[in-house]
Amino acid sequence: MTVNELAVRLQVAPTTVSLLVGDLSRKGILERCEGEADRHRRIIGIAADQQPAITAWLARVRPHGAKRRPLTPDQRQLFVDTLLAYEAAVGGEEHG
Image (cartoon, rainbow, N blue to C red; front, side):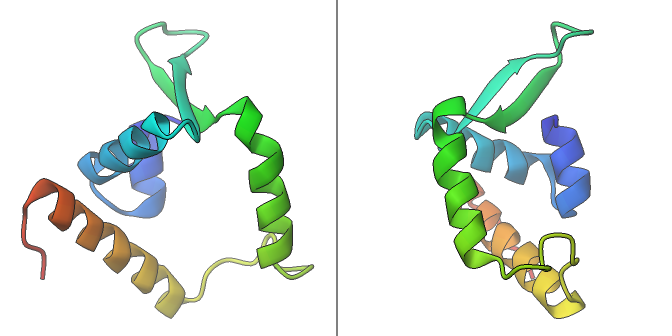
Protein backbone atom coordinates (compact mmCIF):
# COMPACT_ATOMS: atom_id res chain seq x y z
CA MET A 1 0.00 0.00 0.00
CA THR A 2 0.98 3.61 -0.37
CA VAL A 3 1.19 6.03 2.57
CA ASN A 4 -2.10 7.64 1.48
CA GLU A 5 -3.85 4.27 1.19
CA LEU A 6 -2.64 3.31 4.67
CA ALA A 7 -3.78 6.68 6.05
CA VAL A 8 -7.29 6.22 4.64
CA ARG A 9 -7.48 2.67 5.94
CA LEU A 10 -6.24 3.65 9.41
CA GLN A 11 -8.30 6.87 9.44
CA VAL A 12 -5.34 9.07 10.36
CA ALA A 13 -3.44 11.82 8.61
CA PRO A 14 -0.93 10.83 5.91
CA THR A 15 1.66 12.70 7.99
CA THR A 16 1.12 10.25 10.86
CA VAL A 17 1.55 7.26 8.58
CA SER A 18 4.60 8.80 6.96
CA LEU A 19 6.21 9.34 10.38
CA LEU A 20 5.45 5.77 11.46
CA VAL A 21 6.70 4.33 8.18
CA GLY A 22 9.86 6.41 8.43
CA ASP A 23 10.56 5.15 11.95
CA LEU A 24 9.86 1.53 11.03
CA SER A 25 11.90 1.83 7.82
CA ARG A 26 14.92 3.10 9.74
CA LYS A 27 14.61 0.07 12.01
CA GLY A 28 14.52 -2.25 8.97
CA ILE A 29 10.97 -3.46 9.60
CA LEU A 30 9.31 -1.79 6.61
CA GLU A 31 10.65 -0.90 3.21
CA ARG A 32 9.58 1.49 0.49
CA CYS A 33 9.85 0.43 -3.13
CA GLU A 34 8.81 1.83 -6.49
CA GLY A 35 5.41 0.95 -7.86
CA GLU A 36 5.47 -1.28 -10.93
CA ALA A 37 3.18 0.90 -13.05
CA ASP A 38 4.37 4.27 -11.71
CA ARG A 39 8.01 4.58 -10.62
CA HIS A 40 7.19 7.75 -8.64
CA ARG A 41 4.67 5.89 -6.51
CA ARG A 42 6.18 4.46 -3.31
CA ILE A 43 4.76 1.21 -2.02
CA ILE A 44 5.19 0.31 1.66
CA GLY A 45 5.74 -3.31 2.60
CA ILE A 46 7.18 -5.49 5.33
CA ALA A 47 10.89 -6.11 4.79
CA ALA A 48 11.42 -9.65 3.47
CA ASP A 49 13.80 -10.59 6.27
CA GLN A 50 11.23 -9.45 8.87
CA GLN A 51 8.25 -11.31 7.36
CA PRO A 52 8.80 -14.65 9.19
CA ALA A 53 9.11 -12.96 12.59
CA ILE A 54 6.03 -10.81 12.03
CA THR A 55 4.00 -13.78 10.77
CA ALA A 56 5.04 -15.82 13.82
CA TRP A 57 4.19 -12.96 16.17
CA LEU A 58 0.76 -12.47 14.58
CA ALA A 59 0.07 -16.20 14.89
CA ARG A 60 0.75 -15.97 18.65
CA VAL A 61 -1.25 -12.82 19.34
CA ARG A 62 -4.31 -13.60 17.23
CA PRO A 63 -6.55 -16.44 18.34
CA HIS A 64 -7.71 -18.79 15.60
CA GLY A 65 -10.74 -17.41 13.82
CA ALA A 66 -9.85 -13.83 14.69
CA LYS A 67 -7.74 -13.22 11.62
CA ARG A 68 -10.61 -11.73 9.62
CA ARG A 69 -12.66 -10.31 12.48
CA PRO A 70 -12.71 -6.50 12.41
CA LEU A 71 -11.86 -4.41 15.44
CA THR A 72 -14.68 -3.40 17.73
CA PRO A 73 -15.56 0.31 17.71
CA ASP A 74 -13.75 0.74 21.06
CA GLN A 75 -10.63 -1.05 19.79
CA ARG A 76 -10.64 1.02 16.61
CA GLN A 77 -10.95 4.27 18.61
CA LEU A 78 -8.08 3.23 20.89
CA PHE A 79 -5.92 2.53 17.85
CA VAL A 80 -6.75 5.87 16.22
CA ASP A 81 -6.20 7.73 19.52
CA THR A 82 -2.81 6.04 19.88
CA LEU A 83 -1.76 7.08 16.37
CA LEU A 84 -2.94 10.65 16.99
CA ALA A 85 -0.97 10.78 20.24
CA TYR A 86 2.10 9.53 18.37
CA GLU A 87 1.60 12.17 15.68
CA ALA A 88 1.24 14.89 18.31
CA ALA A 89 4.35 13.75 20.17
CA VAL A 90 6.52 13.48 17.09
CA GLY A 91 5.04 16.39 15.17
CA GLY A 92 4.69 18.69 18.17
CA GLU A 93 0.97 19.26 17.56
CA GLU A 94 -1.88 19.07 20.06
CA HIS A 95 -4.93 16.88 19.33
CA GLY A 96 -8.03 16.78 21.42
